[in-house]
Length: 493
Picture (cartoon, rainbow, N blue to C red):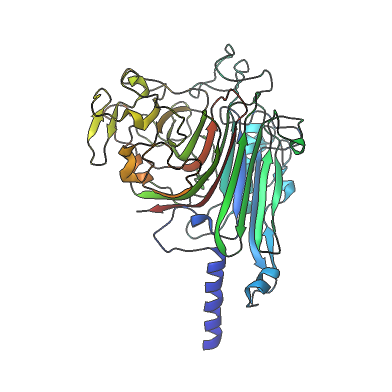
């Protein structure tokens, strides 16, 4: 009996190592700490300008997909590593029929009112895919890393996007890119399901284009393109997610991120229930983010490349969001590391700066203090358009690109961020400077300015999305960005 117990313990420990499951080094907020679990969980979502679907691309189904699997072995008791690999296989949880589901097609749990509504159908398809992928960790189950793709075209004559949550009438073209009717279309999506090679390499991908009817196999000249490839060696290291994003004349504003989202409830920028990787929601100031980033190509001068982007939601009176798009406000903080991105905040453009900056020792420096305010640390600040007590001068955020009003605090590398482990000078973390970052995201986020109505209790800064990637912001020529992400983790301090 003692020998049998000993063998069970050994077998358990071997499986812990193989699956990459570890509680060492502090509590983690993500289901797959450091991206080391051999059984990958990754999903895909595509959005139009105001974080809706609008219309499915022909033959593609609803723009939600997943690649979720466990590494299994036909003979788990074989001892030698090469023998275990030879007898291993990937047990997939999601079929291609699941990934191709589109409006009008039922699936388990689909609400009757959503079957013919493209926006509601996509939301519920994400929940369904999450149920197939879910890992039953106790007490907090989790679902997947999320690849987010977004098209910045907006047909202003369509009336499809609300203004700060209110239905808005059509208005004159020109404010946003759009080549005409249909410019808000969803992309073609091609999925290469993860496969295990003889060398123990697991590899899969999502890719495609927004240019309907084009053939990406014939070359990418003149067309848009996106791709995310994930690869890992069994029982060794982190998954490496390789990203590529290309704009075109028809699609000059595209976004591609890898996100850790809330496993339930809202994620940053959405008013729908979502699924994701954050099994415990991080709250400022007590969390850090670790990630390895290698930027291969930057995407040109318009590429607002986010080393880190955090998103949440609370009302202007500090209350948590409840799904009311008229009063919920999306809050974002983004560190842009493209050295070609200028500081729009300056002594002569105070409206692009937050009203004040808070130092690590909690000293406030007001933006009109030209001798001390770190203007170069801020690309741009914009306030929610529906805030009632804004300090002027002020820039207000685009009221159309989220389902509700939004607030942005966009940062740039600057010495003032050194205490938090963030980039301190232009070029840090950029092309040719691959690094593993350990960022005190919670500490910094606790000191950033966010608007609140005077006299209201401070909002709890609970972050529901943490992501990395780029937003190529209305390029005037075809641009390409390429980068890899690995070792992603969120830990509590």
